Length: 625
Image (cartoon, rainbow, N blue to C red; front, side):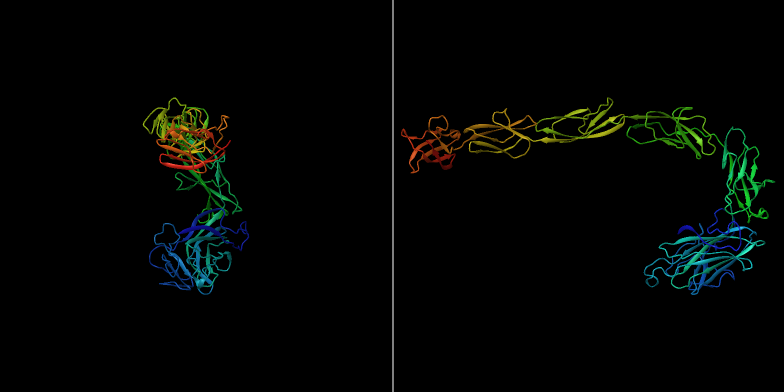
């Protein structure tokens, strides 16, 4: 059940006074209720007294033009909801299914009023038909609720106030809404007549419930202050007894005149008039014990003695505040400098805490808090203070706070050469720090020879952080194959990286090709540029020249097949273009000077048949003179 805001109704007065232009709810203070109607409680349905309605009492389902006083609204497709009265088990409400013709559906005389007095009227209304787009022929909204309230004098001839609710539409969930009027009783008038009129016709919609009708006197808001403008005063134990002048300050929002009767109470519940104190001020006696003061306020003196006619000011309380016990320490606190945890103390209810930097005097560093976030190592002092009276504890409670430096670490990624090691460093500059690696070692630095993820917990007096070092292995080169391309040697690897190559083991180059090499056996050296380990491979470099120039100039004077003698089996045969065998060799080094039987052969192309380890190679080369 949802309880919604008060909705104020425009109304008119038949009298002229300082509130004849008021168009909203009472803006001042209400007196005690002179009339309430919550329709009682119980599971049995009841009817209204004779004369209160022209509608038909329904013993079952309330159809158009019918009503019932019931705790049950589970009819048709209405909300099945509780009444408005709080904590009212099986509370009843007035349930109305509007008649097909607009008109009055409720009338009640309210007695016990005072003449020339401003009153407030209020009631709560709920639209019982839920919003449903499929309902009421697809309209969904149906006929809205619209009720007019009228306040008449006891003769039913003078309209004192009236107003309309406006349309109260369907909602998705039950919502009670409050509506009200303000009116002023006429001279010699002690009763009024309340009327409720349905402005809309019945049909699909216009089904509602009403609950909690009340009438109360309405007057100015009247604060009470002492000579220091306090609205309450609490004296600490042992202070000098206190006396002051209290003053009533009406806001004149309702009354044009004010008459007073001051009252006193020892418990704030039972009040007695103070004889002769009828002005807007009151001088208290010497106060040494708890006491409450207030004043009745009326606009007409004749209403002062009638509780149905007067309103009441705010209450001024005087009390004796006990000296609070010093705060109780939870614990001294030691924290890492990146942790967030406050110093805390405990005090009794009604007591707050002020924090200082000294046991007496000193500087106030935080007020009105039982906790304090310290950020500097030291001792802090908590003082208990009564919320009422501001009485302070005799002593302050000392609390020690220590802040320890949290190690600062940075995660790393390191490379390690294959078959080597690397030193891992926690890298902290805190002499008191301790270390624990996931390897079990406890030094600041460790040496590892395997790739992987390494962590170290760095602790400084309880403040622990974790550093992670990822070690990645740099693999040694893996020679896939070595090839001869003409007089060049090409080294191919099966893995990739920043590798260097050499033929002498010392002069390394990043290029994997060696140019202009004579045939023969070579040792190939390969290493990673960042590592020391060298991988070697033996290779016989053999190639067949495409030409030679036997002119005794020292360059290409011979057709040499360097390195062929290094193979386990080999044979070479040289032919002219006519197929004549000119020179041959087997399992030996081979070199030809371009002669046959001591005679120089002419420039021409010559053919070769070379067999190495049973692999046959054929082709031709050129002799140039």
